[in-house]
Length: 195
Image 1: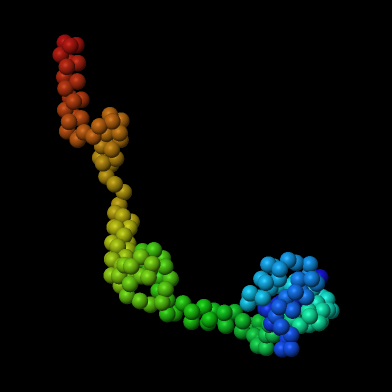
Image 2: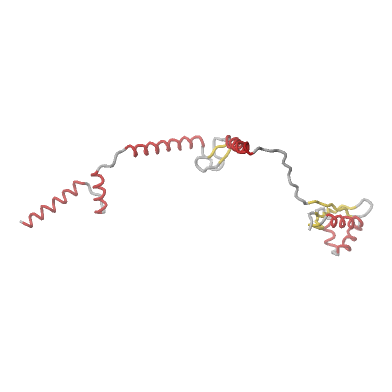
């Protein structure tokens, strides 16, 4: 199996008529007149594919006997030649430098994360990037301030913890005075019954 193709675009030699070539090719290839006309439609037709070079040259010579002009196309992949060389110690810095150059003129949209060249509005979601960055910075500062205040505050008061545990136990939130008066009322009624 090779990498050569034989292509025919309907071209004929100067001293031969197209009708004669068409009839000869139809007889040689064993095709009907309709398919023979399609060979001369102006489109490029692949006569043979994945051929060795000798086989492709043989088909081209046989077609030229009938006055048909075929082309041979080499599909062998060409490996690129790399002429530059980077030392290993310089390679990491070169890659880092290249990435810095690529991302230097780019900005990430704070809303959708789209990376684009610097612009006033996001190409994907359309927001004003400058205003969104300011709003996000303001929000970050507020969050940082709340975290700092939370760290600076001492342990919550003991009464607040008791109040929270009582409200959780009773299932409804009551203030401390109502709870205390309720207890006092129970004690008073117990005293009345016992005396």
